[in-house]
Length: 111
Length: 116
Image (cartoon, rainbow over all chains, first blue to last red; front, side):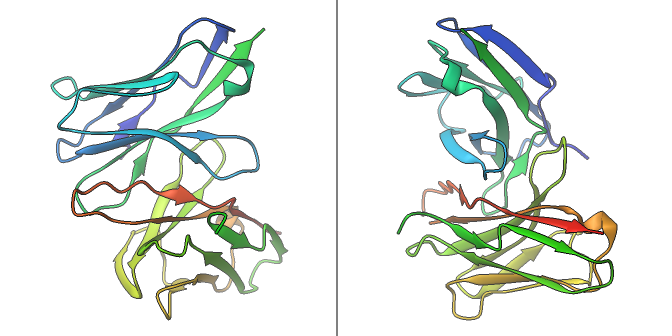
């Protein structure tokens, strides 16, 4: 069963605009959430994380928002750049357990 | 230390053969994870080690799969009697588990296995 869901397989955004990638989870034990970026033929690269005691974490152009009551998190990229084009994976874990990944959202940032 | 490394990057084998992959984690990291990724899916957890102890195995890890981390440093993943369904990208990740529970995992480039 898929405990982490990314319901949008793809997203296209114009350069300079905001990209919003969404993720839903079902397991209420999850307390740590991460976003990874993946280029073809490479392993996932860690982007940003958030623990369940926070509702927002910011790192440069990347901000992750967590809504625990809705079991939903989102990644905002602003402004979007062509180099941001990649597959983005949402992941979540319960304390001491391995990561559960979504299926990914392919982001295309067009000039 | 430049990150997690995996060897080989690509492996093509015939069905029924055994294959072994190696992962060298970031040196100060105490946890090492193996994942498998197939087309259109996110990475799926296989197993993980804390130092040399294998602490958890996924139900995806059939008895044809075995992983070791003999000295708490590098790890190997062996697949015996490979099947076509084993074709996937095998990813290794490492992390330094902190008392706070923060567990940022850093991934290697993966080994792509093709079973003919």
